[in-house]
Length: 329
Image 1 (cartoon, rainbow, N blue to C red):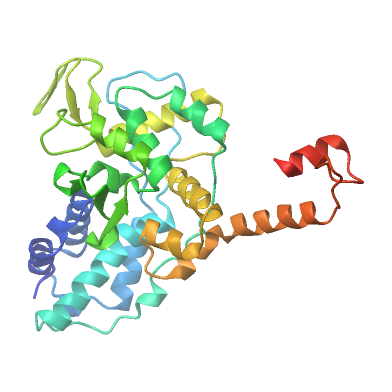
Image 2 (cartoon, rainbow, N blue to C red; image 1 turned 120 degrees about the vertical axis):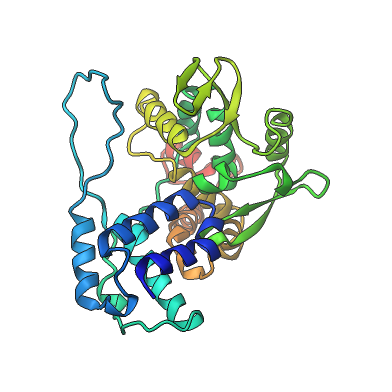
């Protein structure tokens, strides 16, 4: 079986059904281009995978600047991250080869994938304060504000929000279903505010839940937008909206994915790790334990408050008034 045939079959059986199918489509094309369409799968061994990883690591992140537009500052090019290399070429190739050997009866070489998956920096947990959330929201509009508020409440990934369709929204049962990583679905109950948000989005688009208002009329090739009309949110549009809003808000070191961290940390403070695991859709609760810092903070605050006796007025004896009030809050 050749690389081209294997990639095509994987696309037909699996890839086209991914929520982020465009990324999968890109990966299939890259792999076929790199190895050559007529290369046999069995010819791909550890050495060839090592060469593939090295090539991808040397590539740059695609430019976000528009051709022909003049910019005041020179563009700083960045090479793709280890996580991007893993997600875009190594893991897709691994899935193709394993599927080919297990289900398609194709001959494949034995590859030690653990040697080729690059180590990724430990994911940080960045929680937004109420003030930071309000500041960011104040800089968003035209439908992007609705999607970001939804993210802050429900902890959904960007692609889960963009992919949410009306067929997966159950107002009667007060729940909605998102399709997460690997096409795995999970059901999330609606809070009162989530119900209000979703209810208000009806009649904007027949299929997609989240839309935006076009700021201007655009006609470029197959793309046509009319100022004032609504269109489904796009990944690029949501990225740009956040990339502009965060600096304007004055909030530092905050990305869209941090809305997920914020939601998880807030829910954890009112529940437990199992609840957060279900909300985020983690298969292994070990993944959820990175939010345990929130529990430690609450334990510390409780211990601090319990360390000092209180008088009849509720003020902790032996502490400055301001600190005593802070502990009560």
